[in-house]
Structures are given as C-alpha cells and as structure tokens.
Length: 293
Image (cartoon, rainbow, N blue to C red; front, side, top):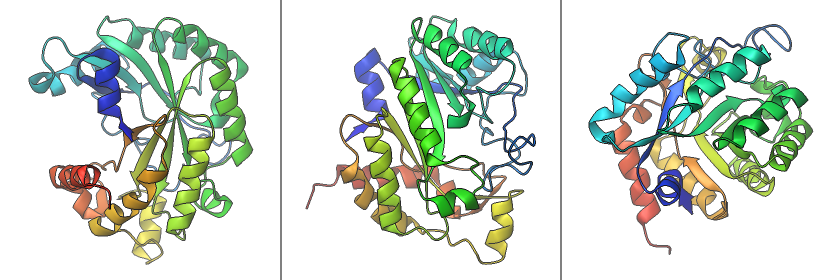
C-alpha cells in the first residue's frame, strides 16, 4: 500500500502540498448539455469549497493557498497546483491552457492536477495536456464514483462506463497520470459493490485512486433525499471496517491519494463525525499501522 505523502516524499525528497485553485468553468451536468441540476451530491461550489480565494488570477490564488500552509510548509516546500472545482477541461481551449500554464509556471510547482470528467477531454484537449506533460507532470483526476449503472443514474453522472475506459486508455497512451475518484457509501451499494468498483478502477490502468466517503451537504439534492430517509450514512466504525475490506485489494502500483475526505463544516450535514479531522486521521492511521492478522 502506497499513500500519496510517501510517494511524493520519495519522488521529490520533501513534503509536497496540494494547492486548490479554481477557474471560470462549469460542467455539462449544470449548463444543460446533459442536465442543469449537477451531480446529486455536488455543492454549489462544484466540490471546490477549499479553493484559496475567489479571484480568476492564478498567481493570487497560489499566493493565498501557500499562506494557509506556510507555518508547516517551510521555505523549501514544493507544491501541486490543483484545479478542483467543476470540470476543468470543459470550456474555451485558449482560456484553459493559459490558466494551466500560469499555474505550472512557478519553480516550486512540481505538478499540475486537473479535476474533470471522462466525457470532457476532446482530442484537442488531449494534445494540450500531452504538451504540458512534457514540461511538468500532469495528473488528470476523473470523477467516476462507481461502476454500477443504477448508482451512476442516481447520482446523475451522465456518462456510461465505456466512456471512462476509453478516456483512461487515451490519457495513458500520452503518458499522463490518471487518478480516479470513488465515492463510498452510495445508497443501495453493498460492501461487495464497492469492492467491485475499487477492483475495476485498479485494473483499468490508472496510477492513483481517491476514496471519498459520501457526505451530505446543504443545498444538494442528496440532502433532500437524506431528509426523506433515503440516504443512510456510515458511522466511523463502519467506515473503518469498510477500509479494512478495500485497502488489501489496492495494488502497490496504485497510489492512494485519499482515504476519506471532508466536507466544509458550514455545509456538512452528515456524517458529522468527519468534521473532527484530527480524530479521523488518527483512527485511519491506526488502521493502516495495525499489524495484519
């Protein structure tokens, strides 16, 4: 099992911090191309509430994000520029490429990470990403969430599984690192369903995986279903038990980028135990360090 922090320290010889950035972009599940409501779990900020500041100037965003970690980062720290909110390969090509290059330019930025959807990487965009990848490493983070069709329809994902498969193939042909987001705890999914998703992702040729516990956030359609009793949420003990099932099936050549995630406290409805980030991290660290039975 390889965790992201360990991978980065080995790769760059120091602690590397991820800086959340944002651009003026939207998503096909919001602009009417597929839907107008967004994915059922997605907040008004497009899952990017932790972006550093509300400005389109990338240099200002980088500076603000660095201030937040300055006390622990030190003067020799390195960073990854992460376009997180909404769909960051969806929009005007010239605008997107300009923002990518602005984010990559500083010497202390060692990689560019771009959150997007498998159905939003055109041939032209693929060539842009390949060119940037020759300058500094480019990571593409794909929101798959689940391989199960019923769950994909419920969350309004808006594309079928073969679209994901083809996107990963094309990205890997260009030598671009692929990281996949998986949501754990979607309504109706069993432990075996989630194991099937993790197995599929790890066998699909990707280099990283993010395991995200389902969060209920105010203002989402998922919140409405939760209020109606349609969306159960896990206790911390249940989630730790689930991780015990999932971690052994992730091969050592797939880096684990996330083991839970956390929603902004002002929006988080459930599960509230995730708001105690220190407690959660300690519990997961204990799970990871525990000797195998």
